[in-house]
Amino acid sequence: MILTTLIIICSLLFFLFIGLPVAFALLLVSLIGLYIMEGGPIGWFAVSSIAFERTISLGFLTIPLFVLMASVINRSGMSRDLFDIASKWLGRLPGGLAQATVAGCAAFGATTGSSVACALTIGKVALPEMERYGYGNRLATGAIVGGGALGMLIPPSLSLITYSVITDSSLGQLFIAAAIPGLIIAIMCMAYISIVCILFPTQGPKATAVPWITKIKALGKSWPLIVLVLGVLGSIYFGICTATESAAVGVLISIVLGVFVYRSLDLKSLFQAATEAAITTATISFIVYGGFVFGHFFTVTGIAQFVSEKVVAMNVSPWVILAMMNIIMLGLGCFLDVGSILLLTMPTFYPLAMQLGYDPIWFGVLMALNLEIAVMTPPFGLNLYVLRNISDMPMRDIIFGSMPFASIYAIGLVIVAIVPSLSLWLTHTMK
Image (cartoon, rainbow, N blue to C red; front, side, top):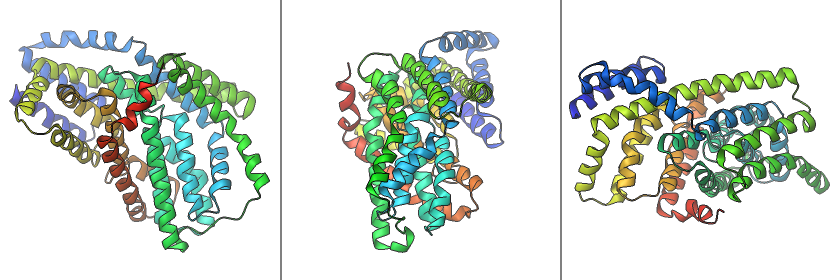
């Protein structure tokens, strides 16, 4: 059992290293492992039933719905409005435009669920403005990379959706649980920017003063976001809709906003958004399916239960084990993408966490925080490359600019781990 598992994990890492797509790598090594454990191809018969049983669930339907909602919103022009509001209200503060970038990413994250989408969309709007006012390269890029990562935590988060599908955890509770930690980290990032710019004013010059009447008028642009957030998260929190139903509500609201409010959505752009969502959904679904088969291999070997029993028998503090899991995920984040990390670790980490008595919702929020750090850390942090593609900034400045924000996320991770009520309090008040 142990030898087969080690061979399979090493083979998986090798296939990922040579560039084989994650879904195919997971399926290939799982089929090899099942062949070895079952003594022939008989172990493959369960693969098709796994695909059918796990992907026909209503919970799985949240993936294409939220992806479609994000695709529609990305084409609406909401990102420009959100940054405009934040910059008008925060621009006169030390590092105000960088703070507005983080605030805009936090708000836009509530519509997309993707850190890459946040960094890309808000970055295109915010970076030229910060360059115009002479912001330091590292502070400007760090604010975009760090702010963009919020899209992975603030609901609706695609990483939380994936975690929910893999572990059968309540997606509605995961969304509500992630809200407060996301806001806390956003405030910590903005506070860091303010402190840096107070100590070094040239790093973040103040923007042009805006009259109060203009600020108040700008708030009028925020109502579409409020409607969308209330429609999605409010319906979950007050028990009106399930997570899947709220995703459908979100799609409907986003289309109505795109057509009648922003007037940026016609039949052609709606078709393009649907096509983009279909491709993204197919990619995610194939990866998740590969993860299901990989998890089935772990079940057949019994390695997850074996590891759980051995770790519990070590009689060490559960906090030590939790710290080890977090360190492993942070290390993997330097080399693998978010989906690979979840699918590699959850077959072992989740049963172990449940064996130790951890709350599955709290544990999911911690995993999302880990993944946020992963998208900011070299050499494979996706947000780093997204920003490099939309700017002429040296990669060195982008990496060094993101490191303080990665440290802030690490501090946030520790705070949420020590104070579970930060993520669980709202879930206990849900109807």
